[in-house]
Image (cartoon, rainbow, N blue to C red):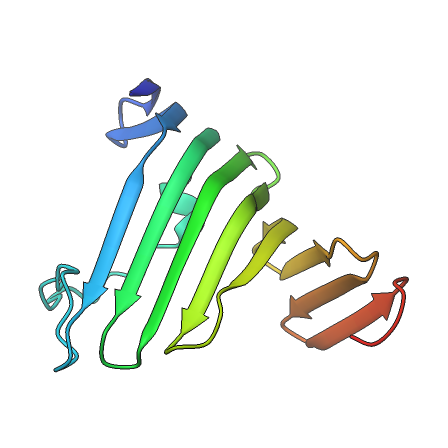
Length: 164
């Protein structure tokens, strides 16, 4: 189930801005066979030299709830699944800024005949036209902060117990 709403941003420029997009329980199933061919669509080559910014395509509020991703790569061989995927983003067009969070609680990765590795993930992202910053927290208390800008890259770590 999904809901959406939009508003006309400028009738003269013919632009429409999407206000809300909510997607509930999407399921993505990615398969790669032993020859490396996948079930993912291949986008057509673009003949345009257009330089559209990701901020031109922004949705004011995007929410994805209870998502599932299934990944089966027979060429590697790796199997992975992510359950209870939650994504939310808010875009402020006046400040040209996007704040987002991504999390899941039930992830598994299995390589070959090895036992599956269970994990969870949480991150918060902030971005504008000058920088992107990220904060990742692990369940054991470690926190990583990353900031990438036009002038450089910063990485900080803190907290936790034991080795990374």
